[in-house]
Length: 391
Image 1 (cartoon, rainbow, N blue to C red):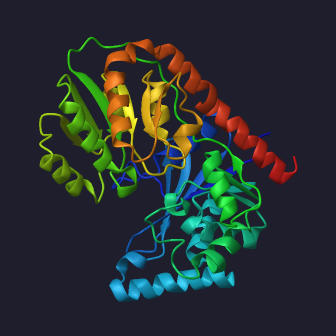
Image 2: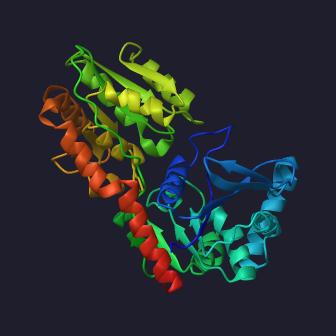
């Protein structure tokens, strides 16, 4: 019998933000579909401290809050500092324990806890583990640990040695979705050994090539600085000097969106770039069905779900060498260019607009399915769970 699993994510889809941590939910659904008893415990930023038990897509889910959302700025920072101190001292995190009790009362008793993104979810997971003896494992998705990241987590004085390393080393296994991310975590001292298991990407039928005169290129992200949209937009401006039979569709939203749109406007790309805003998985698939390729210009990626979504849709990918994607994007499924290489990106996109039909949608789909399908990933996860539990 498969072990029962409690998922504790640092990000998870909600009504307010349905795309947050959607790749975590995809793994939850994959486990559910494989017959694994799975539940989710997710902390939200709310003013109240209620633990809300719901059934979400057939998965028992508890959404709880520490009440930080009710505090004004200065008090909120002080409260967050106290949470960090609790982590340093190994003091139990009461909100997570209360939420876990709700799950227990509902009859769910996990054999193992799976944390997605160490910080901050592992604080609650460790507290539950300390009380119950249930082991926890961690999959690290966050770009906070990437070399050259602009994020502040590991650059905050004392955070890495006093908080993150001790927290990470309580995990019974550490996982990353790519070898480059795994090696980085080892170099940072979070674990001596990090295993690689890719993210789940739902399988689908590939779309045949369209015969549209205007060719569509697709980019999907949160438009954060690490995605280097300035490079992509400059490449589109340069490409527009050579040809005008294409459109770049950008799907996604985030704090940086207005700045990205302003940058595109400054380059005179109103007729060449369309910003679609936040998009569902179904909408992304529809964009890809009408596209010739996807494009990624990131400075660093721990994996890139979007790259695999492109391949599942039967579309090749043009990507920078930014970590995760370069481990599975070969010349048979796309084109890689160096990070920050504007001329190389222009040449790759120009060539792809002419040669995309040389890629077989069915072969791209088969390749992605063999590596990232729910069945393949769940089998790897179960191997780790069973090794930790000694079964």
